Length: 539
Ligand code: ADP
Ligand code: MG
Ligand code: MG
Image (cartoon, rainbow, N blue to C red; front, side, top):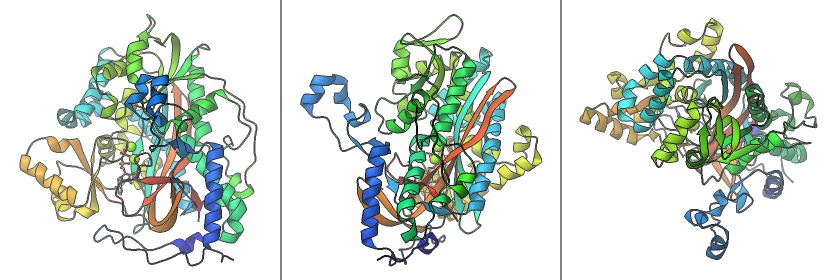
């Protein structure tokens, strides 16, 4: 017999901001019956398996015999990241949704279209992008290569008339100031639109069954249509390009354990879904609950190619259109190409340039990609910079309210402060995909080393105010095993933007991603193994 348990009562206590080290849990789940937890764990594992809330399983290795029979290339890696349907495991997730204040949720949703517009405006200011990144270019080879492609497009006066952005703006709720602060804006390969929609459904389903015992209401978990809205945006871009025989091309990594998240979008472009994956975004679900709908198919085919394959199989036609492997490509959706390891040779860089030169719609274009760098985030946070790109004063104020402290390392006052109190800062290079930032004492060491060198290496980094969200006790599930731990969350809000010349076709918020990580870990990536997928419970 379990006592009602509210999410509020799960609250532990704030991180010790003095040291940046979380305190040990002082609260235990006295109220929750272990048997109930076990039942929910079991049900949620079954649900994940049946609904495609899955990722490739690292622990699945190919047996040599099977490899030889199938394809020698598979020897290079593990089949679970290459062959769909082989070696799957449920995606790591939190058993229960994270409590989150409704006011901050609304605030995050409200700014999504403004950020979409900002990205578009900034992308058109080539000089701003080149100037802001000019020092970084000298010391960061990866950013430099991206800027070279950008310059080449300027030289040939390349215009992107149809522009598609599938973004995700990430936030943490700072406990002390109660403010929603942006961690970063992702403009390339914004992941988990597919799987996050499922986690919200899973939590609603669990609360439909067990909510009474927990004193929780499934309707307080907002519906999440990220997957179908992203698919809709890709479909509308395809329509704008206006070649009915063309396909969407997903640029993928050769070995991708998060392939199912991507396959969800391809599948939604092609198939008909009679259930949860497509529901319109309407406030009323929160009140009235969820209404299943039949979803009309877009019937658009997509193909998956690596950058190396594109280099080998891709060619530009005389009219600038792109053919890959004999197929006309109208929309290029990047789920690779955001990190230096995606470019092991010149072949991949050639492919990226080829794609950029083509008339296909790129999600993202090289300009959109550059707008999403940490350096640009920091430049946009400087006084009077937003005003250069946006007209509406209220919009500007709304965005600025979400900006945390961001600084360039040529500001010696802030560098000295960070050496003194490194726990209050995060040091970030121009990288994506998690696992690249510097925290705690390493910040001090890195800054001192840079000072000693006295070179321009410092331009590779920015400094950011460290945000300390409220710590909650949470059940985290990974590999079928449930752990209870103290955790903090990061809320990502998806945004889709599509325009053709002066006509804005889509500018909307598209569902969300909640990621929860053990509070003792600095980094947060789900794919990188630091965090689990979650949803939110409005409080
Ligand atoms: P990436 O593009 O690699 O995802 P992020 O800027 O999102 O880089 O940083 C990765 C992770 O580091 C975030 O998901 C978050 O968990 C943590 N992090 C980043 N910035 C901050 C910050 N200012 N305060 C606290 N944690 C942060
Ligand atoms: Mg990122
Ligand atoms: Mg991130």
